[in-house]
Picture 1 (cartoon, helix red, strand yellow):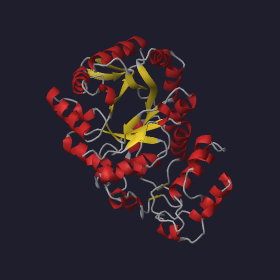
Picture 2 (cartoon, one colour; picture 1 turned 60 degrees about the horizontal axis):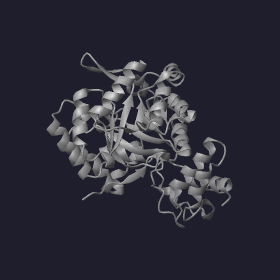
Picture 3 (tube, rainbow, N blue to C red; picture 1 turned 45 degrees about the horizontal axis):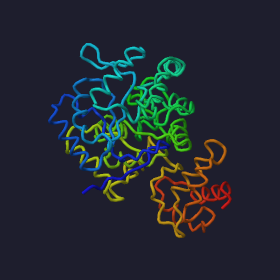
Picture 4 (cartoon, rainbow, N blue to C red; picture 1 turned 30 degrees about the vertical axis):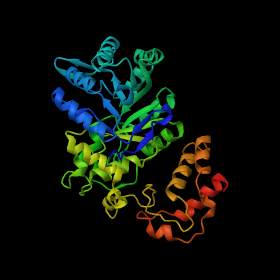
Length: 385
């Protein structure tokens, strides 16, 4: 039985499964194995895949597996990846990029990509090279020709990702989201996100640049699809997790999917069992999804006073969806105005912040000590009701 949850991919008009596939788990496998696992994913409601690798065998196998499902499946492929000397390479060479892109379409047995993802920009200098040069013009041309439907960009650096979103050229951002990375400031070196020394000192709350990025994406309708949701698997290990506590796959997925702007998580599943483990999020209980049980009560790492949209404040005595009110309010302060889409989303809520009776029940339930009553007053003042 298909229990998958589906979400809008931002402003693209595309509907995608909240649980999606990374391509890593299909590498080094036979055509038969890839077909079997993709068919299993489809049977479980998955309709979205990211293919960053330029490996020709991988592209061939995925293309054959999707040959009967192309119009029902959303493919996110990458520009600026090429295959040389038997290995994947990132490139900014326009001829290599163009050749690899056309090879990708041929091997995937399609004449278009739903998302054409400009691959892996983590430094501002690289961003300027791409966006002021031939690569972005190629992406624009391919979109005009219908060979890609929407332009995207992948990054691990929130400062660079913000530049891309603000450019107005991208509809989708592939970004690394998990509780550990979210505490780290912007950095051009992706390895710094998991370096032990960066977790040796006390850390508090989500890095503000990351939080503003997520809110900016929500405001502008730029969809985030998430990579590194398990932190390379380290978050699932008590030994390897910087927190010294292990998350479950469902908790990691729930954390990512409750960030503003996030549409889907790309999980690099190695087999059917790992696909099923990820899909379990769709029917998991509130208790199974509760990531706060891992994050709360640590001395070195704290999220005190910060709304994490976890929903523990519920039920409200008068029925206010407190997490949504907080999210919509936060979306207004990021740009110092009220975007029309946010105003309309707030308007459609069954109950509004002004209805708060200040009973304090929600604050007793909140694991992070948020001043919810104060937040409701600010939201009521902001929206006018």
